[in-house]
Image 1 (cartoon, rainbow, N blue to C red):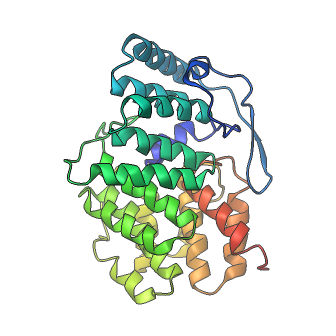
Image 2: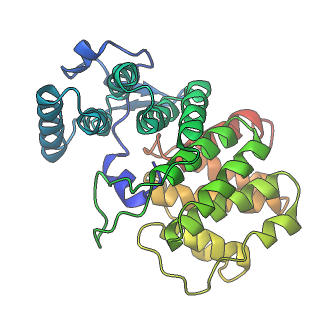
Image 3: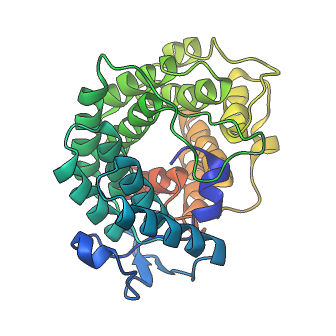
Length: 314
C-alpha cells in the first residue's frame, strides 16, 4: 500500500486475526476482529468503517457473487474487504482466488500486501516472489486505485507494485541486498515522478544502512529540486532532504498517525541514525509507533527497527 492519500483513508482498519478463514466465512463480515495487538504489545481498537466503505464493500461482494469466475470481481472483493480492516477475510478471498486463477500475479500481489499488514512477512515474501516470477516477460498494466487521487490519474502499475511491496518485505526482514534489487526494478518499472521518488527513498535508505553513503548519494541523480508529484510528497521531501535541499527541522511532523507523516518521520529517524545520532533516531521511532497508523509502511519499519536494532540504544 504505497499511495499515501489512498492509505490515509483506510489506515485505521486492521485485523487482529492472522488465520485465514474460508471464503464462505469471508462472505459475511466478522464482528470478532475488533482489536489489534502489535509485536511491540501496543493494543488498538478497530473503529467501525465508514458508510461509504461499507457501501463499496457490499457492491464488490455482490459483483463477485454474481460473477465468481471473473478475476477482477474477486480482486475487488478482496480489496474492499481489506479496506474494512478484515485482512484475514481478504486473505481468504485471495487464497480461494489463487485456486481458481493460479497464474494471475495480481492475486499474489494483493495477498502478499495483506500478509504485510498482519506482520506475516515470510508469507508475504513467498507470495510476492511468485508474483515477481509471473510478471517476467509480460506487459505491465495500470493498477486502478481504490481511492483515486485529486487528479484522477492512476500512478501505480502491477509491476511497480509487485517490486515495491517485495522490496519492503525484504527490507522488513533485513534482507537489504534483495530489497535493493527489488527497488531498482521498481524504479525502472514506472517513469512517473511519484514512482521515482518513492523507490529512490528506499534505495537511498538501504545503501545508507549497508554502509555505502557514496552509493546512496549516487542514487539521488533522478531527483529534481522542483519535481512535481501527485501523491508521494512525503517521499519527494525526504529525497530533497537527502540532497541537502531541505533541513531536518523543516520536515519533522508534529504528530504520527497517518501514512504521510509516518513516512516522513521514519525517513527522518533513519537520517539521524546515519548521522550517528541513534538516540534521536530511537526517539522519533518510539513517537511514531505511538500513532494509530499501525499498518503504514513507516510504522512497520519503525516497529522492526525498534525491536531488532534500537532496543538497547539510549
